Length: 101
Image 1 (cartoon, rainbow, N blue to C red):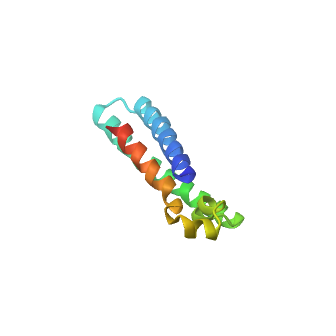
Image 2: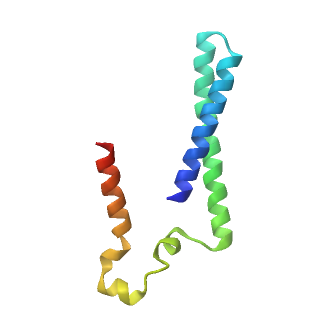
Image 3: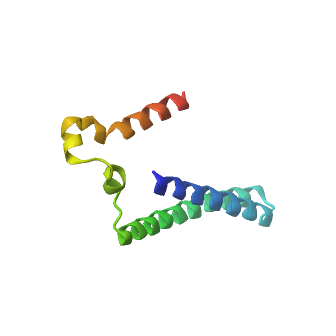
């Protein structure tokens, strides 16, 4: 979840900074709207590059998403309680669902 959160922070920062800069550059309403759309597009591309960079940095260190999640679980613990593998995901999705509504 950390790579996604980092890419969202990068995306929102780029969107805000580019949007404000382009809003001050253009005085016409139409050009301002076009600048906002361009800022959103550029921020999505920047977020994609951030995710790719995080992926390659984690790959270089040998950290995978599954290894980071299950590093504390032993195989006999999983055999006794297979739901331990997905407990974080189910609790996280349940709390995010209730937080949204």
